[in-house]
Image (cartoon, rainbow, N blue to C red; front, side, top):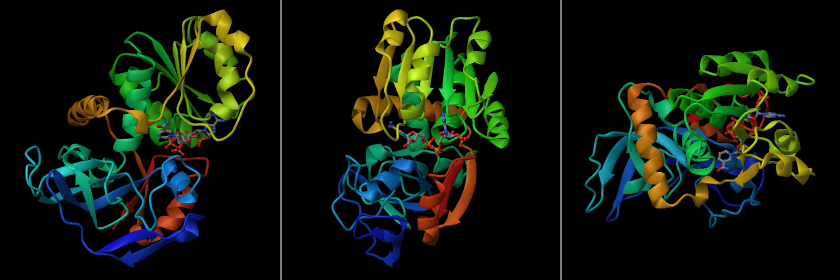
Length: 320
Ligand code: NAP
């Protein structure tokens, strides 16, 4: 089968399309025929070799995909060949025609959700869900500020929060992005490139500030977040691409909490809970992954360049 392989860590040019043996499922494993593979910023960090997760070389990248179960190993009871699934993590990598998964990594994808959309479920939606409910413990009626709402995690967070009865304010850096955030269900949308945009938050939240902030670029925004979050508020650091100086007094005077998170730290029980919730949302139609761009598998290098550029409007997916 065709798969993208990485023989050395480095820039996008290290991604090459090659012929590799087809995976076979051992006990408790399934093989999924990939119809679309999701591209996430983390795939580029891992490829660069500087991420905490450092796979042995050579490897096939990719954590997310959607497709059809091709074969199941001994003892697999939850899935059957022919079933439409989305993949949340993979043993062999998802940038390939076939991917090998543990049974627990494949989840039913409703008929109403396309394969391209399914490839955009796992990392973005699981991250958004975990940030909102397992880390920030958000409850209906609270206000969440999605700081960076136009990307994969942001659009997921807006949909999840809106469906759960939270008041949602999101940001984007372009007009198109702002429209997208509004379409996903945000009650109010701000432009994170406009001077003084955070001053509008107080007005939008009755002077209190948001109870929860989901932060996509903490190295730029964390200190500002601590200046606008509500008393007793929680800021979840989802994304950060550098360092920042903060004034701890801002957190002190608000009894505010800064929470880190990475999806890789979620326990199997927490992940099972996350995917049960996501499955329900996909089935009900409250969760509708936004696909921005479909590229052929062979163009993985281009996808890795595009995924780090500003102005994201939905997921980039690779089609084998
Ligand atoms: P993405 O699709 O590329 O989206 C990036 C988002 O950041 C866009 O909404 C972008 O808005 C926004 N942004 C750009 N400049 C900003 C600013 N000054 N202030 C606030 N937001 C700004 O990426 P993603 O997949 O959603 O991931 C977002 C971040 O979370 C990435 O850094 C990723 O590595 C990280 N992440 C972490 C975890 C975890 O487990 N902790 C999991 C998944 C992702 P515009 O393009 O409209 O300007």
